[in-house]
Structure formats: structure tokens, C-alpha cells
Length: 354
Image (cartoon, rainbow, N blue to C red; front, side):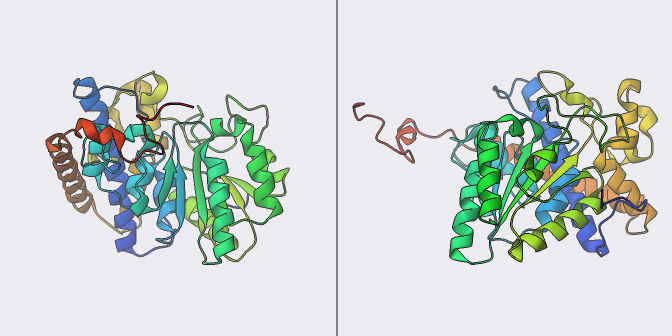
């Protein structure tokens, strides 16, 4: 594997961009934790998926994109939207079905698609975004404006029949598309890369599938922001240079709270946890010590001299306050009027079916 950690999991960036990435990771984590809490309190209904444990992939990867690049995400999209600069209040309002949400309450958790942030589609249809992203890449190449398309998906998407077709066309026509597969399988703590195959694929490693279509593909540790930054930067540069598609599989260690049908918060994230994991339940202690990308990132910031514990505590408090304001905004937002159900649809819902 060409990308290995040198012992420091920080991208080669100055202090301010690193702290900005830390803030986004904390924003994603606290958003998801509060969402879980609201559901368990009975404040909203419906299923949802969270991005906890994958922040070290989404934040550095999306930070490397240009404003006009096109993104396609899945049912685990909250982290991608917030990493792109999304408003947590509008995102939560959308999940709650409120009018001030990104799609006026019609998208919900799985299908929130903020066009102003470059998200052309977020979908709960497994694998459905890969053909769409490939088509968007074809349009981008036709326009020759330097845009790329980015498909953000999990390992389960690769089992769908449309995926080889998308890979074939992307490779055949050298389309500007990045396939970023976030594999959150059940790996041993501290050993994300190469530890286990996908639960739904006979192909192993997963990189064998795109490589069969001559798409350059690599596996990397998705909990190491420095490795993610390096690999993504090189791949994106190659795509923009006209070298065709790239496939990156980032492997993460699944958050223990996602082992049940409904996510549960095993231990709320605080700055103190970065240095005092003995305070969390024993059955999840290894994950918080070795595999939690947010806590690992904060430890590395301090070790590298980019921040001290007081600075990170202040940053954490600011994010917690932002999430509290987002919750107030979302619940203050009204539900759409009944008539709005007939707007922004592809066909007249009252017309007879022919």
C-alpha cells in the first residue's frame, strides 16, 4: 500500500486549517450524538444512520474539493454535508421534516441533498449514486470546466449490478470521477486496513473490482487524516489532469454504537476522553482509545504543538453551543403546508395514470 502513516496522523497543514478540520469533526460527532439523543427521547420518528467513526475520512477528503465539484452521497450523509460546510440547523430541520430544511422537509435523513453545497443526490438506494455520479462526470468532461464528480458510498454498494457498468464507462471514457468507498466493517481495534473483507462481497480486497476495469485503486486507513489527505490529494490531482477515474477504499473501525438496529451513544464525546478513556464502559474502551478518529486527531494536535487542552476544550464548548442552537432552530421551524406536497415533483400528482 503506497500510503502509510509516519506515526503522525495530521495532514501537512498550518495550525488554523487543522483546527478548522478538528471543529468539523467535532461538529459531526456532536450532531450525530444529539440526533441519537433526540430519537431516544421520542422527539422524532423514523430510521436514520450516523457517521460516527468515519470523520477522519469525510472531513479531510471533502476539504480538498473545489466549490463547483459535484457530490453524491448515501444514507450515511450527515457527516458529508457538515464536512462540506452545511448548516446543522437546516440539516436537522430536514431530518425532522420541517419547512426550513435543505429540501423543505421532503428529503428527510436519507435524501437530504443541498444543491447549493454541490450535492446533486443523496440516496438511501444502495449503490444508486454511482451511475448518477458517473453520468455527472460525463457531463463535466463534456463541459471541460475542470469539475469532478465524487461518489461517497459504503462497501455494501459494490454488490449492486450497476456498479461494474459504471466502472466500465468511467474507465473507457476516462471520466473525471472519484469513487470513495468508506468501508466501516467490523475490524479489530487499531487495525483498520486489510483486517477483514466486506460482509456482502466475494471480491477481496475490494480494490480488485475497479482494477478489473483498469481503474487505479488503493486501500488506506480511513482513521488517519494524514494518510487520507495525502491519498486524496494525489488522486484528485490526477483526475483533474485528465487521467480518468480513481477508486479509494478507506477502512475504518465500526463505532460500537452502530452494532444495534438503532444507534446508541456508548460514551458522549468530550475532550477529556482523549486522555481519560478509562471513564468509558470497558466493552468499548479499546475503540475510544485506539480507533476513535476524533479523539486521535485531538491527541495528535496536542502532541504536535498545534493546540493545548484548554484550546480544544474551548473549541468543543463552542461546537456544543452551535448544536444546541441548531436544535432550537430545527424545532422552531414549522412543518410545510399540506399544499406543498404537490410542489417540486416530476409530475402532476392529481393527473390520472395512463
